[in-house]
Image (cartoon, rainbow, N blue to C red):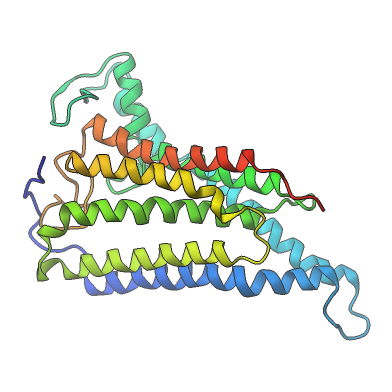
Length: 309
């Protein structure tokens, strides 16, 4: 099942856009999370524990306000992200497109890997609503159903490994980041294996962007691995990672059909959508890949005993 050459007239990823993306992914997200995990949080922990020396008159209140503010911000990040995903405009757009009786949008057979549209009705519209709803309703937006389990996972980790009323939200954020990194790094192996043969100098900026994204993911793995207050053994994620690797291998063996691609010579329009863009089966596979990571991580963490003390 090969890709169809259906590209745009020019690369929408300009040099300024590439630099902006790399700065955000590698600099702000990747390096930023590492610095917070390995430097900022230990400093705040020493401040909270009272193990740092302070000038006279520096009350315990001020020693607690900064660490607790940070914990509160982390909680807001997890809960706020969940709220944003649940109330995203992409849901209402998908509902109007697939769930209304006046909708003229066609559905696609979920078992077919080539477009075969037919009028939506009943359960077909529900499946399309769930698997085709994207963030902000944009073609390159993430599947909303893919990301919703992630903040739930982070909040569960924060609750299970809580040390005080504000929970351990930063470790929850690190687990979510680690899950995203595992998903994307293994996915990229299948993606490059399938689509690297279409690379040339014209898509060099797209390849560089992919490389920058993989560096960000590696930094997220490193931050979780080296986090000094990590209470979840790294080895517990072995089988979820292996199982997900098998899933990607099978997907790759079937030609790895995907809905968007970072190659303007293959993708159509500014968002670089593929011929599988509207295919419910392909969209469902993409959503399942994310839900598998979240569910398998939740299971292995749920099985772990909470450390005493």
